[in-house]
Structure formats: C-alpha cells, structure tokens
Length: 77
Image (cartoon, rainbow, N blue to C red; front, side):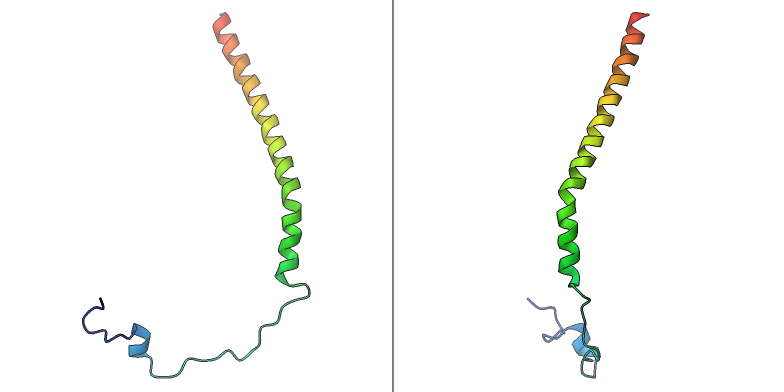
C-alpha cells in the first residue's frame, strides 16, 4: 500500500526535472583485470591459513604449558 500523496513516484522523480546523466568515459580494465588478481590471492589463501593455524596452535600450547606450571607452583606451596 502506497503512502498518501506519493502517486507512485519516488522522491527523485518528484524533484528532479532533468534527464539522468550518462557516463562520458568508457570503463577500461587493466591488464588481466580483477579476476586474475583475486584468483592469485585465492591460490595463496590455503597456505597462509595453514601456517597461521600452526602458529596459533604453537602459541596456545605454550600458553597452556605456562598456565600448568603456574598452577602446579601454587598448589605445591
């Protein structure tokens, strides 16, 4: 249901008297385009993800070891 007073036109249609401008320049893509750039990044992704996961697990292991040592030191006293 349309609000009262809209008469089926949008705000731009009500207040814009002139035609819509057309782009003057044609869009040109670079050599290879964006597809080549993003496909290259997609190929690198799994290797980076794996190395980041391994590094994170090593840090977590060190953190757990530190917590274990601190807990065992406090319970021995």
